[in-house]
Length: 169
Image 1: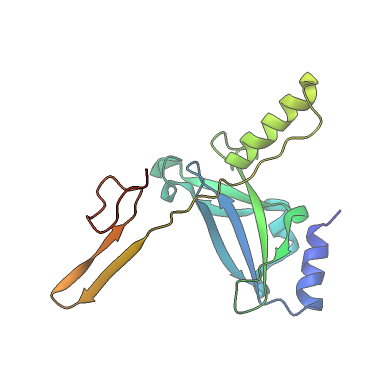
Image 2: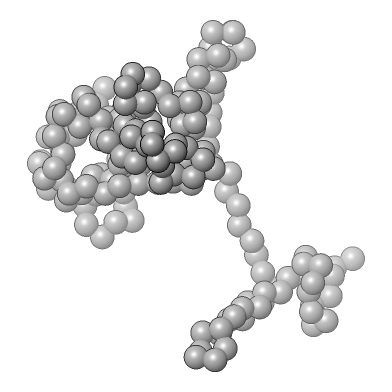
């Protein structure tokens, strides 16, 4: 089991430059805060990191906006897409007064669902993951000149496709 102390040691041993703390909002959008490795300490894994919940759509009003990001040391991994060496870590969202899970945190909701599945005997394991979604277009045109900014997409599957592309029957 990985602990906060293990992560701090890894930062020093592997010369990690940044820690990217991440969470998902209610709509499923990944949110994050990137911290310089020099500010990562043991208190972060005990007390969490305070943040403004009113800046997250659908969460808190400005007058009750304080929230806690609690890093989960077992979720840490090297992010291969950062130019500098960066550890990424997932966080739970907690209420600052009680340190109880925030009821709109998707990670906390998933943990409750997993607990229900296990306690009811329906199953032993619950698997959650993203829904990959993408679009394939037959043609894409765009312009970013001074007096002409816009785009045009076309696909045989679009109801608005141009005459050049016929629907397949």
